[in-house]
Length: 80
Image 1 (tube, rainbow, N blue to C red):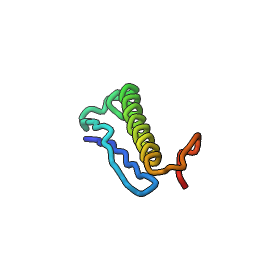
Image 2: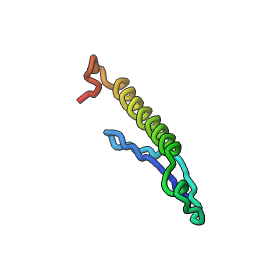
Image 3: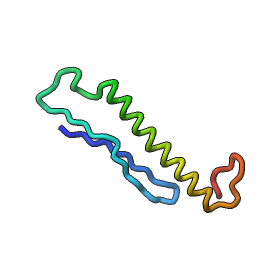
Image 4: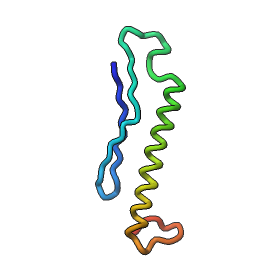
């Protein structure tokens, strides 16, 4: 079995990007407990990769808004 984990991020202005986080392989003949699901190391790595994608997307969106909005100041990050 091949497992692909992707994240789809949609901005507030409906632009969508898809990011492939990781691929895992679980051969059907290997059903030992350590081969079922994710190991702790795999789970931590997956969470780390997900966090990198989410933080980068959030930072990019804020930077994009700051470039186009002249009213941004202080803690008011979004132009409305």
